[in-house]
Amino acid sequence: MNENMINTIYLAAAFLALFASAEFAYRKLKIEAELTRKYVHLLTGLLTLLFPVLIEDPWLVLLLCGSFLLILTVSLVFGLLPSINAVGRITRGSILYPIIVYCTYRVFLYYDQYIFYYIPILVMAVCDPLAALAGKKWPYGAYQILKETKTLMGASVFFVSASIVTFLLILSLSEILVIDMLIISISTALCAAAVEAASPRGWDNLTIPVVCIAVLLLFKNYTSLL
Image (cartoon, rainbow, N blue to C red; front, side, top):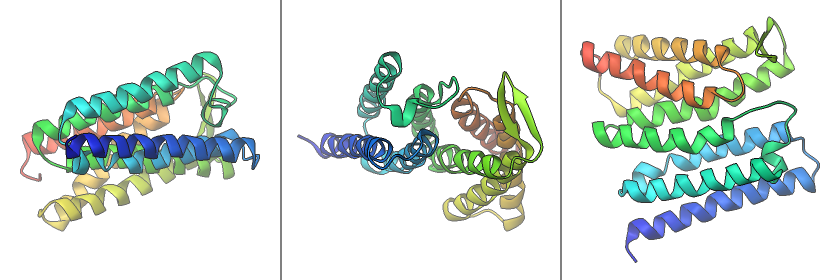
């Protein structure tokens, strides 16, 4: 068994342990599903950051993402995994998550630049739940998208956190000027915040990474900033 396969097994076990811990928190510790769902959302994103480092075979990433897509789909259909699915709204975010992770991984392989993987995944995994928590705690500027309530406070927190995350990643992964880093970071965060604010029912798990990649490619293809 080669190293890629071994790493894939380890990662699969880590994801299963994550789901199990969320179920324990929901069933035994009585933590509400909104929080356990965000816990899984965040930790899943952090675990997937290991894909480019530990797995060089895209077929194994497809196998991993496909397996969890199947698990999450079955859980949604049959009412399993309440720590993820027992939220008081219709959402497709959990289904879209493994799909966008695999697609983003393919973009990373094509351009061979970590920036095209880490920025979309981290902005989705970190900034989205931060925005949701902030909007719930301080529901200023509430509005509805297809009967789902969002807030301007949440959008603001998303923009600020996405700007910071993007700037730090560009600082770590590139050698461009600081002013150029700021331009890319603010542009990426602003566009991602806009689609997050307008995406209902978990579709931001798709739209946020797609927009992040699009903005980064725009700078790469039409400027010298990346």
